[in-house]
Length: 79
Image (tube, rainbow, N blue to C red; front, side, top):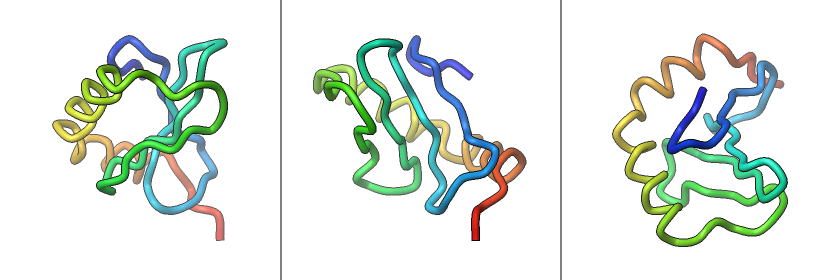
C-alpha cells in the first residue's frame, strides 16, 4: 500500500490498537494509529516535518473506515 508517496503496510501478526507502519527508506519508520487522536509514533529515524505529518493525517482520517476494514482482514492480533 502507498500513502502520500510512502511505503505503508500492516504486519500480519500485530498488536492492538489498530495501526499500520509507514516509512521512507533510510529516513524514518512510523506507526500510524488511525483511530487515535495522537496518530504518529516514531519507530526509528527522524520525525518527518510538520507539513508532511499534516498531509498524512488528512489522508489517514479520510480513509479510516477502509483502513479498519483492511486491518480486520489482514491482521491476526497477538494475544
